[in-house]
Image (cartoon, rainbow over the protein chains, first blue to last red):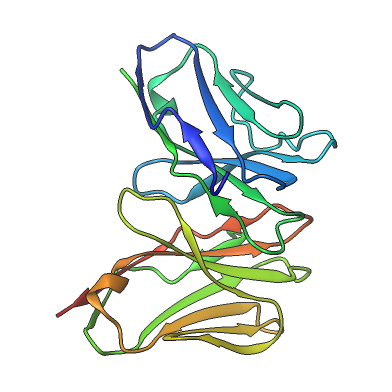
Length: 114
Length: 110
């Protein structure tokens, strides 16, 4: 597609429920990244996929967080047993290669855990 | 020490002035550097990239890089109210994963 597409744009969930966030990167981009941004904070790295390589999961805050990327394209970030501190904007980005050209971000998913 | 640090804001400048945004980084092996602009409630947008020491100009924006001092800056000339946003410095310290600073909020007042 023309840009990075994320869905849903907003998600309100009850504490303890599981949520899935979706990212569709720019066509042909081999690298895909997930970050989250809490209110008034900077971007916190979560996970990075590059082609068929094993993902870099070093930023995932707990084992409640997981992500997969199917067919080298669409990615899903799953948060199990959501907690109020998970409330944030979850941003997906993609890049053509190693990130040396910078990233293109999607519009984000605003997650609110009540 | 944070990997990427930006000058504390918020920064307020009058319309038409030069806004100067600064960033330092800790990893000497970093090779690529970026400035993103983020309007309130929106996602970050890439506005400048720089890879070599010196200045890079694009319209009203100039990025400056000094690898010896581990310093990156962004100058915005003839600042406009539409430039009011949070500016994020990002550094690629290792293969493919950008590290972002906390951002500097810029306000340009008429």
